[in-house]
Image (cartoon, rainbow, N blue to C red):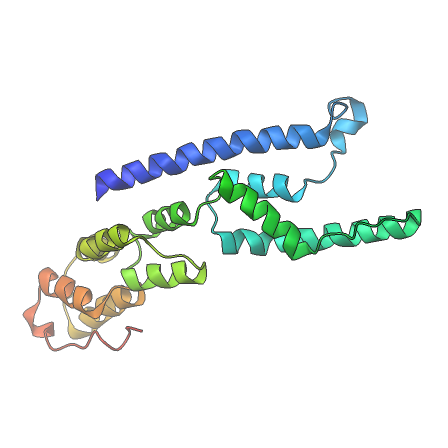
Length: 223
């Protein structure tokens, strides 16, 4: 799994560099040729929706659901500003302003068409970032909140690695085997609370020792 994680991390980095380059170009084009002169350089115009989206994606991968949520307030503010400007100008126009949701949808489609926005890449990136600290239940729950899921291959890799990830987390967190029933229960609750399955939690606790704790219940904290 480690080799695949390195490949996925490299792909995410390359995508971030690509988006960052596009974001810089977008910001430069929106600033205009006079942006670098005098006081004008200190009062740059606000980013367009596309520029704002690229700036967000340059920081890290986003899901489509998450990026839409972040862009919608700015799309609404832009629509209100345009309506106010039209009211002041009293200009006649046969073109009605786009609905904020339509504006955002156009930007998202543009980003996905160029692979700047990828739910698959986001799912793999988020899983890679969470896998050392959380179990499969927690990771799948978080991905579902973003409206994404892992590919069958990635989901299988995550399943196959859960025991080893839980074992390493127990070592990092506690550093020793439980010495009492209450300590056993505390460590088991910790792993269950991090989203590791009851089977995985039981296997890890059996591995770290203390047979007297075999009867402790680790199912209570699993969703």
